[in-house]
Amino acid sequence: MPVTAPGEASDWFSYEAVGRGITRIWEPHVHPYFRSNIFRVRGHDVDLVIDAGMGLVPLGPVLNLPSTKPVLAVATHIHVDHVGGLSEFETRAGHRHEAALFAAMADEHTLAHLFRAQPEAVARSPTRAWSPQSVQVRPAPLARILDEGDSIETGDRSLRVLHLPGHSPGSIGLLDERSGDFFAGDAIYRGRLIDDLPGSDVQAYRKTMQRLLQIEFNRAYCGHGEPIDQNELRSIARAYLDSSS
Ligand SMILES: [Zn+2]
Ligand SMILES: [Zn+2]
Image (cartoon, rainbow, N blue to C red):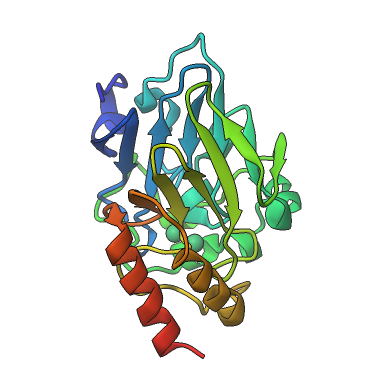
């Protein structure tokens, strides 16, 4: 993806084209715990931005979004590493179980205080005179409230909303059944799955893992780290089921 913004933003984000009009974007200088993925999905009629990173540097200018096409920003859940930049986008969507909370973006839901307390929260400052203490997620009320089974249409893709609670109450995934692209949020990713945050629910997470074992897809684009295939996703889900109770 061409980087269009001059100055600080241009080297804050890293990019990788991952196929079928999808770009993975991440913030390499952010502490690994908070280094999440942003996905830009090019659609025929609508472009999607799935999650919005930490919001430490404006994201919009580097996404190279066309001005003539609508953009829908979808939050997979309300944690700070996924919604920090959400307020930049005019049209936003998220799951019903967290929908009301996006209007306030209180620390108790975004967990922004955990980032402020994180030693070495960033490897280098995103802007001059920046400090982690300044991090506060801006309110981003939702225009569209998503439920299990809803479809997000881009003109050439249809993404089905899957409610995948456990990591957080309103965690969702988006599944394109035709292409097999699966955007998993923090429901699953490579590495230790976090189920002990305020709002986490181990029993709900176990049900989500059982559900994930049944889903057919080609490639999962996770909230953190590299994309994974179905075999790897299933082994992560089985390992979670074996080790939790
Ligand atoms: Zn999360
Ligand atoms: Zn996350």
